[in-house]
Length: 206
Ligand code: MN
Image (cartoon, rainbow, N blue to C red):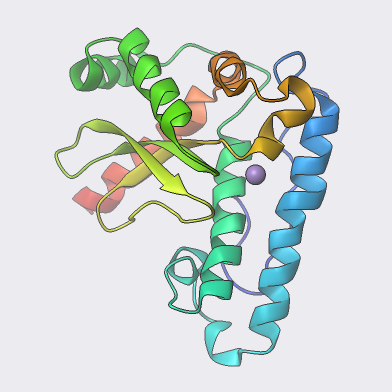
């Protein structure tokens, strides 16, 4: 999430090359996902706000909660995809000791956390996102949202999300959603998740 947070929104470039996530996610999938699906939400959100000057000073996170369903859906599409692409990296590093401790305290083990993330993704009917977020008790929690809804920002601080719309995996794996979710384990950007964690604790303590 490195662009400024207001209209007019810009399509944030991928933080890695289009073929960098192979063999877990192909360049075909990433191309359509970033350059078509995500960009489509950016363009549509800008077109909607162009006609609604009062919403041009509203930050992206607040736009995702607007009662105007067109605005909230397209703002959600922008927010969710920017976090998703930032949640992945070709340069995988294990979670830090600080993150590992939080994972163990919240789920018992990293394996159990993945069981929960993958089950949540498998149980989601239709399209949506699976999130790893800090809950009000300061523990990590797996949260599921439908379509382009975003997580409840008043309650949760998101660390990462995984897109489980079919367009995230269908070209590579057809209906095999579990294979996709399992593959994503290998490309999670734990450094970015920790940055999000530190930003959220600064916000709470500040
Ligand atoms: Mn998507």
